[in-house]
Image (cartoon, rainbow, N blue to C red; front, side):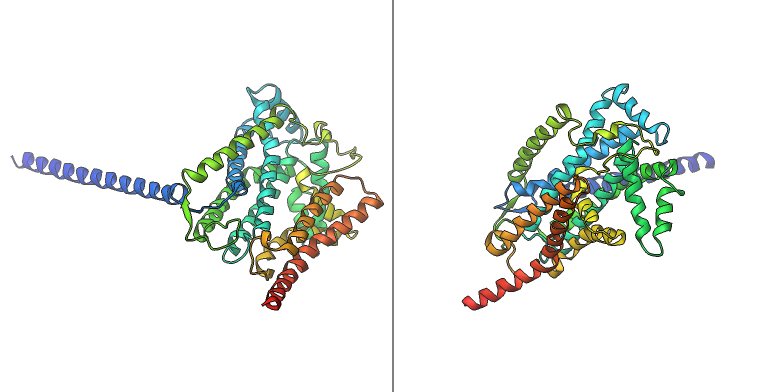
Length: 409
């Protein structure tokens, strides 16, 4: 009799605890679901957006789409790629010829890197034009520069993976530059190589880092978006737009969606009609350490910085110049002296801004040319203007504009 009562009590107690636990789990699930929807609503749907944004503000969203495309296609490629110097080139050909739709995935990934850089370059120059680096968006700008550097590192390592002639010699030339760094240069180079020369260990290192870095980029992107939504978006007029804002959805969602379809159409032209136009033909030759290509060039999106590297005769100076051309971008928010954001209202600065755009294109053109006196001189002049713009013209023109404004008053 006592046993029966005890059993019933335990059963009822168990049922009560189970019911309480189920209720707690359901409540917690509903709270998490509500919290998630609240985040999506605040940052994607009812996110307050300046009413006067143009299509130039769609490059940020397109950069995010490019990152997703690169991660997804990269995962599928990694399923069939073999990171070994004897098999890497053959595994890429296997993907192209034998894997179902492998050619499409590979071309999307290879050309997707170029599309990513096109979008990011447009995003950076838009930020320069409209003063998106000015207070209170200094950290937002710096996080974007960090993303750009991580992108370059990821793209360089990815370019090595097919193990063609240009991949191998590009890796050899660029990594050997680290030896110019005093004291630690040799150690860094040997760590990158995994030995005393570019070998199988190098390829394995680059494959591992190339696979992991995009997820780091995704994490920094979340921080970048959080900083953007904390301070709010800039606008073409460069004025405080806290008063005149509308929700992101549906107004700017439709605008970004239209930009996305234009981007996909442009992207598809390269994938289906000119899949190899943005690559180097020598990379379709298996890597041969005994035969140096006549002219070693990196991918097109590295050419401006490669031109800066070549323009400085000293090896250490060239490495410092190339690294400095990227590090200098972090300094822009802190050396700026102008109180006017948009270049639209800065006629003097506008002239030098477009000269910078032309200068960057000239550096890209010089970077693909052979080492000859004419190209070296042009590259040196373009390099001088590049550093002159960021270190001198940005602060000086701001001071000059403030002086002119006080004189007119």
